[in-house]
Length: 79
Image (cartoon, rainbow, N blue to C red; front, side, top):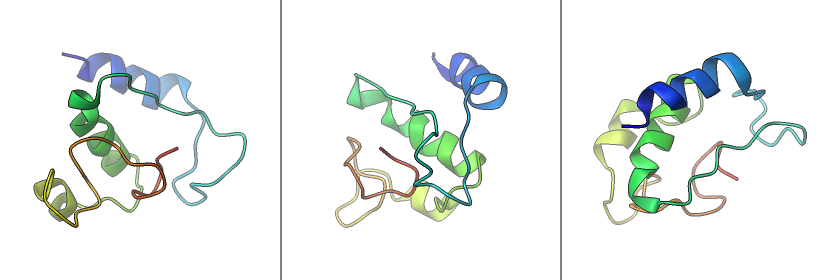
């Protein structure tokens, strides 16, 4: 899977701030495959963004901030 690759990017290379998710100079983690978005939500959670373990358990549920495919501006830290 992509988890080791994502970990390396988020921990060693990417510049971001979970306290300022709209920071203009932040790096963006872009996935072209929506099926891997669970990884994106997990990395946001681990990086301290406002994505809780409960949010992760609601993955792909109607009204959740963790839909099956990332939606711009719905989840803190996306886009």
